[in-house]
Length: 227
Ligand SMILES: Nc1ncnc2c1ncn2[C@@H]1O[C@H](COP(=O)(O)OP(=O)(O)OP(=O)(O)O)[C@@H](O)[C@H]1O
Ligand SMILES: [Mg+2]
Image (cartoon, rainbow, N blue to C red; front, side, top):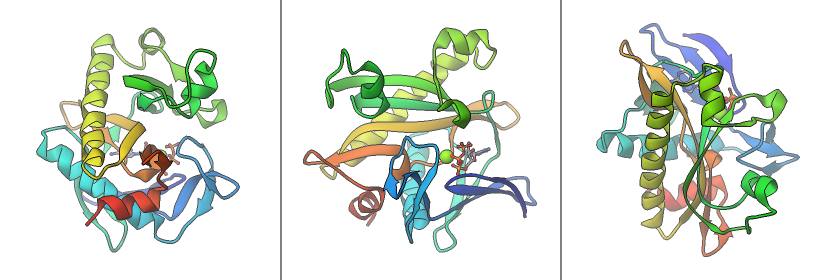
C-alpha cells in the first residue's frame, strides 16, 4: 500500500490491485476551530469525525449505487475509517460541482446585491476549480470548454448527474425532517471507457443541512441520519 496523496481531510493510498484506499482523518475544514464546509484549510480536529464522515459516505454511495448512478465506490471498513474506490482521473487538476437549494455561503458573498440569505434556489449548479491558492474560483461552461478542461457534452453530463445526485441526497435528508441547502460534489473519469463518475465523499463535511431552521454540524448530521 503506497501513500500517493495527503489531503486536508483524507489520505489516498494505492493498493496492490490498482484500486485506491481513502483514509478518513479526524481533521475538518474551517478556520480557527470553526467548521466551514467551504474552507480550504484544516480548521479543527474532532475525534470521531473521520468515522462519522465515512458512515454517511457509505450510506449515500450505497443509495446511489442502488439508483444506478456511476460512482467510484467499492466497499469500506468503518473501524479503520477506510474506503476502497476505483481510481479516477480528474478534469484538469480537479473540479468541485456545487448544487444549491438555498442561497447561503459564497453565493451570498458574491450575489448579495441581488439575493437574500436563505432564498430558495432551484437545484442551481456551479462549478469551481480546485485551486486553493486562488480560493477555488467559479468557472463558466464557456471557460471550461475554452481551457480544454471539459467538452460541452461532458459539462452536460456533469450538470445532469449533479442535479440528480443532489436531489437524491436532498430526499434522503428530507425523510428525517432535514433540509439540504447546498452540497459540493467531485467527479472523475473511471475505467477503460473513461466514464464520468462521482468520486471523493458525501458527508456532513461537504454539505449544509438545516433542521427547523438551525444548521446541523457534521457529527450531529451523522447521528441523525445513520441508524
Ligand atoms: N476515486 C478517486 N480517484 C482519484 N482521486 C480521488 C478519488 N476520490 C477522491 N480523490 C481525491 O482524493 C483527495 C482526497 O483528499 P481530501 O478530500 O483530503 O483532499 P483535499 O484536502 O480536499 O484536497 P483537495 O484540495 O485536492 O480536495 C482529493 O484530492 C480528491 O479529489
Ligand atoms: Mg476534499
